Length: 436
Image 1 (cartoon, rainbow, N blue to C red):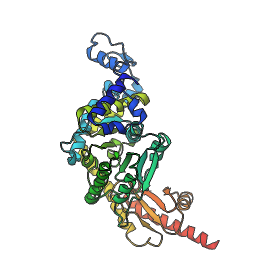
Image 2 (cartoon, rainbow, N blue to C red):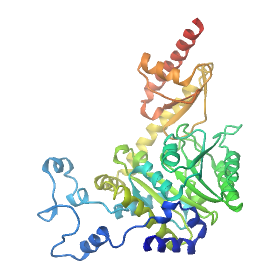
Image 3 (cartoon, one colour):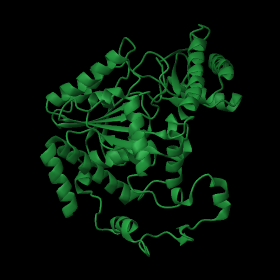
Image 4 (cartoon, rainbow, N blue to C red):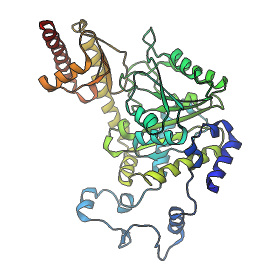
């Protein structure tokens, strides 16, 4: 094993042996090179005032070489802020700005010890990093039965972990904390579990309330007290889009210091929060018991980044930083929030009208981009194909009964027509079936 990896492992074992035990074989082996090209280039950048012949970019007239046809479209920004490589952990000013935003929006973090956010190539990359660091073959990854399909690719296909499902909702149509607890305690013989908490949920648009949040935390703490090391990943992709009386914070703050056997990892980003899907700017943030532990985890994270993408795109990091620092940012974001809230509320009022009750019910939703219909009489995939081919309407079929509708991308005035077309399609399919 590389001496740098061994040194990081020794730090983790000393600071919290449970966290060291959570690491995958890759997680234990990975490190960030301190004597390679990047470290030498960073030292030269600080000291080589005459000539810096280290890193592989081209310089012209004292600034990064660039094409005028590109710079003309980006003239607001200095070439140094878009053409150079960003550091592997991300643009330092952006990391600072995102941390400030995170603390303001999640007061429950308070004075708890958290690391500095590390920039990822959006949330999928952040989840992939976490999978590399913590998931080994056969490890349990616990997610609800209503989930984003990419979890299977990220944890099970790439890393060989085993997806363990529990029902998202209980009999009262609230978050099923008891199901989470049972799934966790079933891993006692393994002594390890990875939990993914995705709120607002994709595909249902559900976020738990305060009482449910406490129940989730209690279930995770009970598992830790039973001797299970728990890596908790809060997938906060749709953070901030809370439209009703749910939690308005990430559970990361509540879990940050809940037990030495619990490692809380926040995975979030500008992607959906700031409506910049194509920018691919995300973040990974760790909670821990000491600065040394956090530093070791961050070094290993940087090692994964260096070994895969080297560093994230610089221009989009600069664009997001510019937005966060703009005096108009909060007002403009609030305006978009109100539009999204209006679409969610209009969707709910249409569904609650009673006119569609013979065709479907719907799963509780209060946040995010989506909601899910629970079909009563037709197959979801049959309905999806019919909608697409006969009416030019796109939806997502999930299993046999669930149809995901993204109200986020439908203008509020068009939502009623959308659901009327879905209902019409159900009736058309029923008619065909009855005639056979």
